[in-house]
Length: 316
Picture 1 (tube, rainbow, N blue to C red):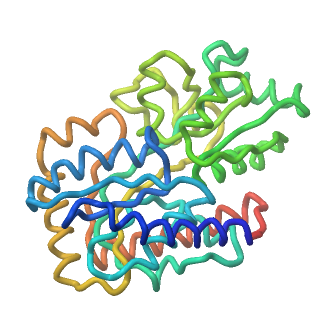
Picture 2: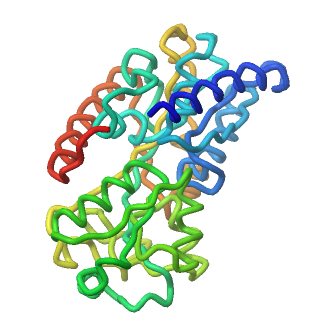
């Protein structure tokens, strides 16, 4: 925790320094995950459209690592002028409270919800040449290789999904954290990891590139875009549904008028069929603004607290 706090404070200092070199008038959108992550894949086309809608420049600033602490604290401590925003997932605002006794930011008091943007299910992945061809064979392999099995994550949803999967089935595997999901995927492909759960937004490119095998999806039904991939329930693991959401937050003191202007722009561009087309293979648009978004996050935070307890995860 001391290391995380130290890294987050360094990032906050870096934010102040980098602001001077940013484009005049540009709004900095900070992400807690790296380039190529699901959040990054959603952010870039979205803010291209929002930029045109508002005639305003937006700069994507990837700040991965420390379970999202670096990006979240940087935005929480930023000037409340609407020029610094956080584009994030349930990792920072719903799951971290269940994983850590103390956070360097308050997910409720330090932020003003702007808009929910999309939701995305998760896929259970193994490398292309891995011995298991379905979930049951993966379970059998983990049982037979308890000292070898490992799983990775670059976001808390992936971590919780992996831990929950193992707990549910009484399995054992070494968990390996990464700064962001693309690094974990690289090691999965390279054979350093046995399996991982990855959000569809980040998984789509590597599946299309034929570099991994998707054994199952954590959605309640198969996706029309991936009709051959069974659900976890179909694979014998009942009631195992996991989804990420991605949304935008501003520092708590940003004026309501600015927040409403942003949320209105997001609602308008997300109704654009051309933008929806870009998301159809990776996530589901779901726009909620203001209090509706705040209530959605509150309920999700309670859900992940229950899941953490069920998985035997004790806050550190």
